[in-house]
Length: 95
Image (cartoon, rainbow, N blue to C red; front, side, top):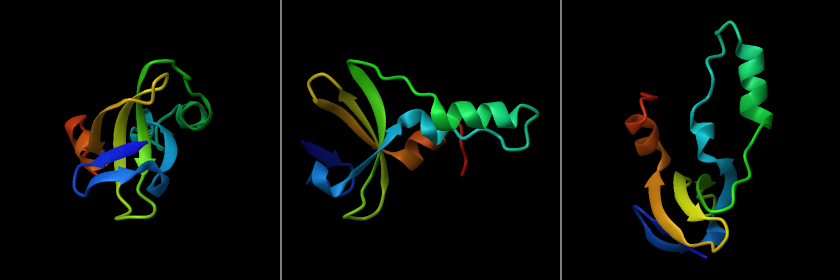
């Protein structure tokens, strides 16, 4: 599988480590009243969809960047690759 890195161009997927659902970008507030329940859900509960899915990948054997990869889990076709920091900023996270 080839991942088209937004900065470095096409790279073999062997350079990357799959880290899970892209929703992991949205860490819960550790000071919230329901922090324990929120972190339990964040850390342990995941969907396992068939079809189009946004995933978090780490470029371990490269520039060590984090990517959000939109991939069809049934065909492995990658339709979009974005830097995770850009996705987080677009979705309202400043850091």
